Image 1: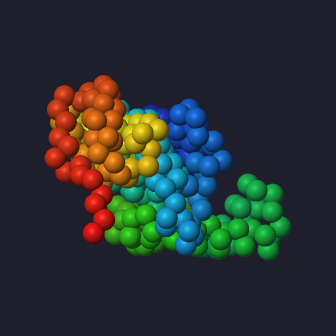
Image 2: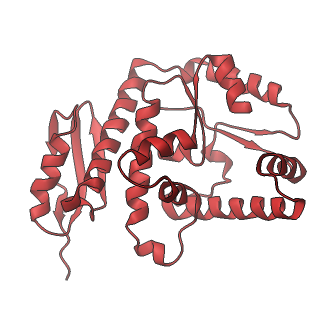
Image 3: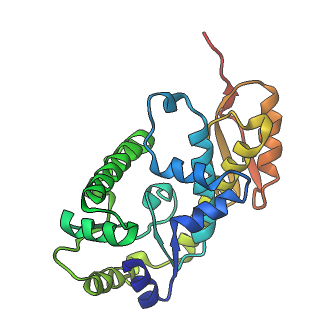
Amino acid sequence: MLAECLACSLGYRCIDRDVIVERAAASGVSQEDLRDALEKPPGFLDRFNHKKYVYLALIQAALAEEVRTGGAIYHGLAGHLLLREGPRVLRTRIIAPMEFRIRMARARLKLERGDAIAYIQKMDQHRRKWTQFLYGVDWGDPSLYDIVLNLDRVEIEEACHVIATMARQRCFEFTPECQAAMDDLALASRIRANLALNEPTSNLEVEVVARRGSVSIKGKLVTMDQYEEVERVARAVPGVTELNLDELAPNVQA
């Protein structure tokens, strides 16, 4: 409700998690697996599971592409973390007392009270573990957000007005510099996703940085044959004008 109110007030597009999952799934990965990657915390074995890296690479690429022209409200788990290497965005966290959340969960999911409480506690635990594992941060840390609003203190319409007012401030304008930074993030994310989808390089986990078409890729190769594959896949992505693979090296075991 709040996201829709903001989109209407600001004239922005409203994008939810399902839109991003559907876009990412166009690469051939199941939507269920992508949702699991966003929702379920990693277990012990997941620390050695490469699939989550692949799924998150696809999701980040889909999100970056979806919002790259600005003018968008995204409401979904960890959007501010998936886009943290891009331009400054207004990062908002909405909190509410348990009774409010229970009412919302019961209405939306048609749950009994006990089931709604269990669902909320489970999701909170999952989010905390997920962000700690992937980004090394506490999901509830207020420093990760520009504004935190408590719906116990304000109505939806009031919260919408406060956030919309902040979004209109000069510091959050989508300037040409912001557009360039978002284009860089979208380019880097697409290269990383394409490498994850390409069979010869699908077992790699790399860091990709783009700046005005100049791309650097850092990581460990499993075999030296993959060097040429990384170069081929990266250069095939539209927008790449220069490629630096100096920090791409074989994973040599001592």
